[in-house]
Picture 1 (cartoon, rainbow, N blue to C red):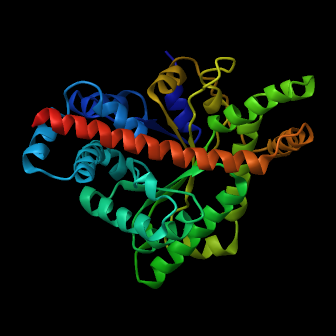
Picture 2: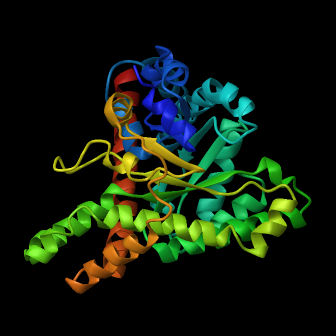
Amino acid sequence: MTDLLGRLSAEGVAVWLDDISRDRLMTGQLEALVRDKSLVGVTSNPTIFAKALSQGSAYDDQTRDLAVRGVSLEEAARMVTTYDIRWACDVLRPVYDATGGVDGRVSLEVDPRIARDTEKTIAEARALWWLVDRPNLFIKIPATVEGLPAISQCLAEGLSVNVTLIFSLKRYGGVIDAFFEGLERARAAGRDLSTIASVASFFVSRVDTEVDKRLDKIGTDEAKALRGRAAIANARLAYELHEEKFGTDRWAALRQLGARPQRPLWASTGTKDPAYSDTFYVDELIAPGVVNTMPEPTLNAVADHAAVSGDTVRGRYEQASADLAALGEVGIDYDDVVRVLEEEGVDKFAASWNELLQTVRGELERSR
């Protein structure tokens, strides 16, 4: 049987799982994915944790102890989530060591309700970094305008950062600049740049969901012909921007000091429209030096029938630019699309965080 995930890895795509749960850790499922399916990283978000806590009894012992101790609701949520992340970091630690710290990473997000508050984001990131206390942790910080200085500050202090909720090319450029600034400040403070890592999570399928909805509303043949083109074009142009930014003298100076590049990470790669292949956002975004974090159904689909046929990003920038231009010609406002997606993304994660808190509250009350 062809090892499609292995082939994907050989093409330079790091295979990460967009999921975590206590049950997955207790049963050894995560270790099995690392062993059998080329898995080298894990991402989490509030939605994933809310779902994990609402299922089964894996969290009962811990929530019972937290209830006995009388900890606050938000502190209980931190204790529950950081426990899983610390455990996952330990499972992935051999990968981290074997890859010299490139992979074997596990991501934990700051409270998304503070995504518009720079100082609170920095303070929360520091607290989570201290709580987990593992070198292969990534702190996830949303790429809001207010998040950019928080990203620079955290990197300057030596925290490794997964920049999340990136939708626009302009904002991605700002994220890379924030990364450079953080490393420059870290170096000025005497830190070893080789110990600081970062990925930039560029969201994919949500772009098509929003754009396709607008194309369907326009309803012309020209509009319908552009369905399913926006997300891939946007991501490919993001990779082109990555190549440009990491080809500058500014980056060369940092690289000579031991810095590692910030890798593009394709997030939201589960297909939401059944009209598209369930491996669409993997097959069409193969390029060296990227991460693709997949929900488990997508991971299994890739293992079974992905079309891994070499680089599908570089050399396609002209077509990507033409696709975005064509969308503009039929009336799709790119700037408005990415603005809406960022606002919705922050709101959805905040809602999921509130759902997580309510789930924890229920578990605590049940344990008393």
